[in-house]
Length: 632
Image 1 (tube, rainbow, N blue to C red):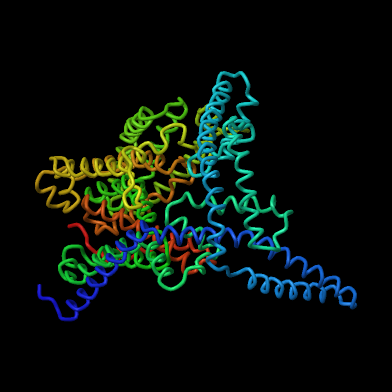
Image 2: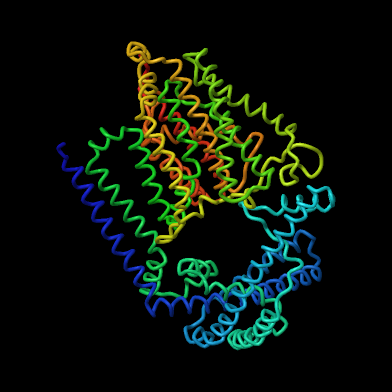
């Protein structure tokens, strides 16, 4: 297709911009390894240490000014409100003056501080490393002790202690991992020795600080120990994180001219490289716009461009783009199999299977059985998957029979069925005969709302063959499982039953004329969709780290529908590629959109609002682009 001059000019400009960004990013990586960057980072750390110490002086000066103002107000007959206003006014004046006095230091002062800070940092590094190692060993023992308490309770030996252990687990869980109680942690003799060696190193650093800050009183030595420890400890982090930690304390102001620019480029090296890739893709999109529109379709092209724009905005707002890519890959694998469950429904002619939650319930029941029997590792994962499939097969068959009796209203009926099934099992979760104290309420009966997967098979796929590349964490096992599921579905679509199912979904009259039993194929598609949903919720739960009951599964159908529609599918046509591309784009837009919105309006708390707008907006947009297709 012929390209317009405007199209060529814009594409060329974007290509040039991508080259500039890539060169800047590579230069930033080179700067990170230079001696000048190490020196500047050291100066920033010393400056952050000085500002931390001077902060105590500023607070003391401010407090004294307020006390003096109160005394003056009382002596001169001020009212209570007048005294309060006068104290605030004088406190602000004193604080501004103190900040001006202690806000700048010449390089010589910073260099004089280097030796003491470096010595303290080295002592702190050795202590922190050993403390982390010993606390990890203690945490493992503590968790084993909790499991033992629960095992005793199952045997009926110490019910009260088992309830205590269960409550402790409930209260201390966060992001799939237990927050261990370190009350009884006892450091080793070696760790105590390193802790004792910290004191002279800290005292030496404090003495140097006192020389640079004459107003730093000896009484502040203990008060400043923890803040200074946190500041110096930042030197063990990666370049970008260390830079951000010192910059947050105002240490950027020590850098001037070329040094400031070079350090900023070094800090943004990761984002610049990813931004260059995004701009390059945008340039190719502009250059091949007509071909892409014809092959991808307008909905997918628009959402893809929106995703690239969000990547650019994320870099401009200094959002860690590699970290966000890690999150998107993780969410793609976590939600991917659930999105795949929509595919057989569309191909068989029942449209978007919003009642996939009936399969999700089957997967939750099988996982609960594995947790009830205290199964762990790969055995627990595959047991849950196989039992979930066994439960989903008859449920999906009955569900398919129901939809055959209500042709023409499948989307509405499936939505009602899904919601009703979730509500029904909200009652069932209180009545099913599970007895493991890890699953049930400590007081009363019934299953708890959320169940930790960490001590069973949580993150087992995520951690399998996982690796880091350019700051991006790749959950290899999770993505491989998703792609394996997609591959199996692709092979099924090309088998004789799969071809017959596609024919029944594409045109019922043509399929009947060709001898295909349309009703049977619709049941097959519904059953396969239900089975995939059962496996999908198991993959989701192990990746999320928690299993959610009661109303947890209710919105899963909308998330899956959003993903497959954004990938280019319609309510009448879908392919495996639509699932893969759609899940990545949907989770990418959702993750980046929320972060960019919060960065643009930090006080707005837009996370949940953006999630709802993006999710439902994508469904509405994709449905309006389906062109009113129908099956003949």
